[in-house]
Image 1 (cartoon, rainbow, N blue to C red):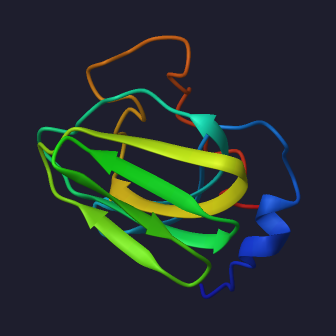
Image 2: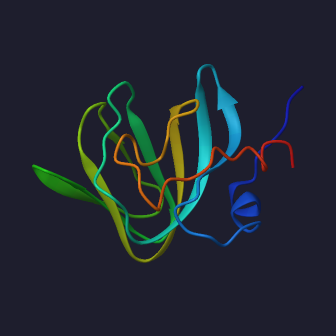
Length: 123
């Protein structure tokens, strides 16, 4: 079965920040949409890279040795094991691609740890 995923449509279905939602699967990876605002937690993912693609707004990804700022249409891959901290001064909409089941806060844990959410997968 073939289906088109409309990212803007999926992003219009929720308003909470830092709560990624799976919208598609790709081999052993998940494609997620997330709205972000403010500062996330410093964390890393030991076993997987993480792709960030900005749809709307701007996102800065801080790393211990520098930072990158992404605007709409730009992406950046954080390599596995690299500690990073996403920050958005204003709300931004982002697509994430990462290994299925990855916890958004890595091993850092805390209040921003999101539940694995597949509620938008088949809508």
